Image (cartoon, rainbow, N blue to C red; front, top):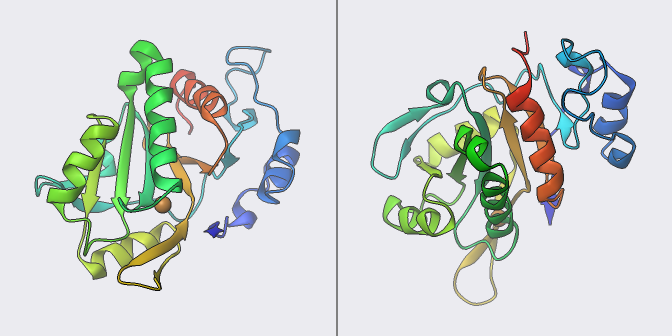
Amino acid sequence: MTFLPSLGTSRLRTAACLLAATALLSLSACKPAAPGAGSSASAPAAAHFNAVDITGADYARQLSLKDVDGKVRTLAEFKGKVVFLFFGYTQCPDVCPTTMADLSAVRKKLGADGERVQGVFVTVDPERDTPAVLKPYLAAMDPSFVGLHGSLAETEAAAKEFKVFYQKVEGRDKGYTIDHTAGAFVFDPEGHVRLFVRYGLGGDAITADIKALLAAPASR
Ligand SMILES: [Cu+2]
């Protein structure tokens, strides 16, 4: 099962397309603007994205957790890059590996610009996803990805800040799976949260959105 966070719609009523997007039903109506096309390149508020535009959201603003080497990492240190942040767990059978593989492919597709895209993976299964488990998992996906790990309380707080849902589901035998929000948050190079990428959006759509964010002037 997949879940979407509440999208704070009252903060998003800036364009008809955004309203359609927040309904999460008619995303195909929101075609991306070709980067540089038209005469309104200086008006980032008018940009259309494939993902859900959550610019100005009053959540997903901060994060501070340790990486797999025990170093505290914050979003602020990634300024200048587009950050693609994802909550998941390494034993996830489908959503997490697919999402991370998509992002890895997007980075390759972007060529040199891919260096300016930072994947960040926050585990919602800190008990099993120890740094020793996270490190090789992410290295195999894409060595540039940063894996973050917190205590149970820290993980809960981080998920709350991002309105991310996650819940253990006990298996029939031993072990468990975790239902969790299947989507990623994208931050622009200024460090502002801009997009929520639904699971399954696809590499091409994500690439177009990230390109637009890399090319855009400061969001405010
Ligand atoms: Cu998953």
